Image 1 (cartoon, rainbow, N blue to C red):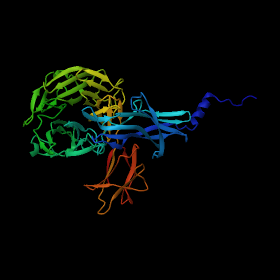
Image 2: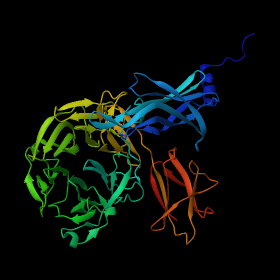
Image 3: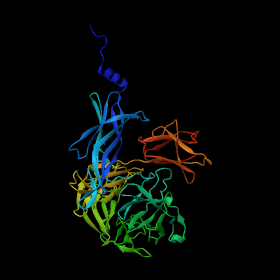
Image 4: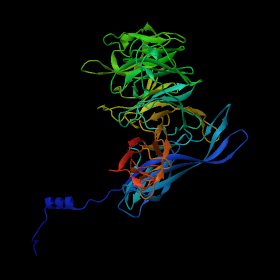
Length: 562
């Protein structure tokens, strides 16, 4: 019998379009962190730990029966092993929460390595998550760059408050962070100075920025709040921290102030005013003096081509000529200051073309001159961040690469004028700032192959601080501190609580917020795994905040007035 109806290819395609879509398998790493369990120690202070990495995963799959886990390596994938994950619960967006524990065996902390003390074991563990359901599989390997957890590499705790555009500076070998702007609202400056404890990775607030003179009259004249300061240059000479110039947020007034913090006494003093606003000058300490160096030979109206120099104990800045300034043929150089030198990399020609220059230049504070070191193999846009780790300039590759086709991170050796192109990944957040991490002395099992691990801290623009090791090819994501603040006078004897849609909060019962001066109630957590938290405050856990639910991103700080 002949068919009365013969389906066409177009009809079959229509059926496929109308058919319900089959959910896809997906696994995603939410967090990977180290866990060191103490086992024993000896009289020399050396300790042996059981090392684990705890990895939280988000899983989506149409199949009930599935296997989930993590593949990991501690030796650059020469060997690897799999660790199964267990189901934990549901996330607020419906995805399943799984957790894997990677057993790294025993590691030594502060063991004797020759005449020094160091750590024995791997600096990082690199990993990828997998999902298997029948014959289907899914992976998350960080877009080809692997995820990582720092085992014995330096780790920094999340910042007390999310901030961007902060200024890192080394003082006495310890990393300090100055200021930084809030990501919310008006983007006010967070007026504090933080210090990183190299042993514990914890941050301590050592000072608050003072009022800033807004005229050449100095401390005797009018001043502005440090909360509106942006774009200041920060440099250290010995135990003194200098905060120089900057602009006033939203107004644009350019400041010529010099603020000096004595870290031994904690006291601020007002130093001599700058000869002129900063313009494009960058700071470097050389020979006990502060240098503010022009980074282009093209000067604006009324601006000189000289460096501003403040000598130790001097009552005024002096202006000195810069030799070789004509070598700075462009703008938008990526800069990094270290050991009396200011490195200037990349650059773009002025005018409408903006052609890349690929220069590698250095200003030497001892000679007060610019000289050429070599050239770079790739273009830079000026949006990249750089810092000096282990004597080499590390240049990051950022997420917004502005159309570059072959962008890559770089490691530039200023002595040999040699450039190592690093893998394109990781791409760092556009607002990230690089800072040198405390160096760590490491050895393999048995105390062999002793080496120093030089890494950089990536200040992501949120509260999270990542650890990036170009040598290991690893980027370990740090913890994120999510902070919500509610300004509300609830009255004597009453309190404010917080409820929300995702752990550690819940909608059926509130968690207590902490009172702080100004009637600001604060709730903070590092246990939020989801990208966004939907939440609301309550008075005495009974009276709800009116209106719509509030939202805060993981690692952010949000202030609400009620």
